[in-house]
Image (tube, rainbow, N blue to C red; front, side, top):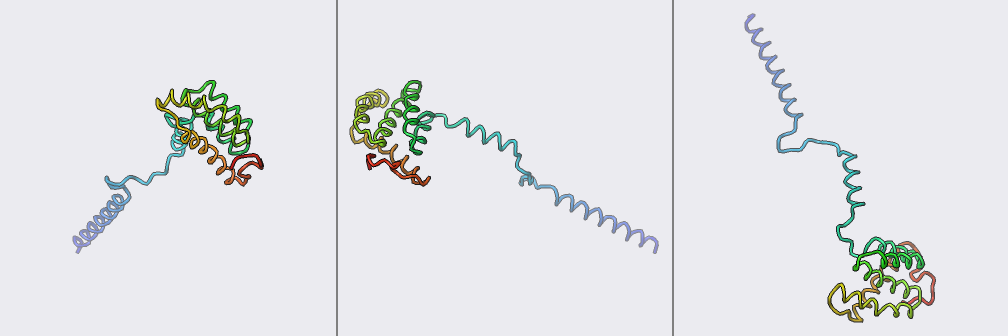
Length: 171
């Protein structure tokens, strides 16, 4: 009788150990599963900062032109013209070429068609130097129109009049 009580206690202890062992195994992640870890906030902030401030390795229009495009989208034509002049003076050839297109778009959006047309020979010259092919008038108009359309869409999204309240602005 005593042996059977001892045996029952041993079996009960073994069951308790097995239950604890089973619980311990259930808590640990399986090798094929990743542990449930909270995201490291600092690492997230660092990666986000690198991506935001690092930017693209090759910005197609350049920082000054991008800011000029935003200024144009907010009807700040003078500031946009100043930023394009900065891009022409100190930007790469590609950025200067885009700045000339953007400057023509700003002038045209402001209603100064003659000043925009005065830039066409310089636009053509820089285009051909960079692209190594001729710039057709249709392509030039398409490029300039793209800048104007982006600015007008931005204005509409912000609740600003698409033509900045300027009746002389081109459609």
